[in-house]
Length: 384
Image (cartoon, rainbow, N blue to C red):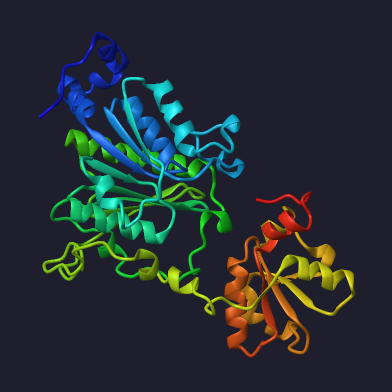
């Protein structure tokens, strides 16, 4: 059942959309009566929220707990430079209300977690998933299926993106596509690997398009299909996804009937347990060793393009990319302390774990990587 009629102002605002036979007055009423919850108002959530608000979706929910950081601004267009340091929900609400004051904005300044997910989902027609990590993606999938709410999926990394629609009755879900999460640390996040700023705009706009189609019940959605985007080559490919009858969530006999610990499911909680992390040294200890002339090997495992932004060459860092490490073990000495480093300590931790399996018991991780060095040793060093 659609909501109330349209005002003269709304008819004028949406006139270019009303002229579409697939929309018209009835479709615009559907949009006005619809409610869409966005998980995350970052790179994907920004364009999706803007276009849904501009299209006249009557009620938008925003779930986010982060503050605006300067590094967000090349892709997260809900936010601007004066908003740096403010909660993202504040700048997102202000931008949406300035764009279309007819839209009701409901803000949830919290993490989307197993303990609150079903409560937050209650009363929403549709979800747009703008999360950027595997535990949250599996949580969104399971929570939406348990609540009977379809969701629009999107993901970006470097120059590549994905989009699909899950949670539609009879169609596959995210677990049908990815039954198991990747090992912790195997897939870098955008902070580690980078992302072209316009790519989230492209994928988020696709998510917004799919959401509008679902509300209007028009066109062919991406349910049962995975759209793959290669922005560097500007190629779009499509994969068919089949519903898995043995899927633990949407299968014929589902075994997941309540939300679980998704950090544990994805292996990230175990990686954080005491004793599970690799041996580390602090950046201040590296500085002391350098100042006192102690012997050590410092190995930077980042990619070549990252070296031009910042490096620790001044304290003896050498460069071997993580992927090339297995081919260059003969360049490392087993009789001298070996310190591995990267931007934040994630990739270098993987390198330490690998090297120790290869007999380099002298390998340790530089805790926090270059970000920690800039914070605690050299505040003038640029970071990214």
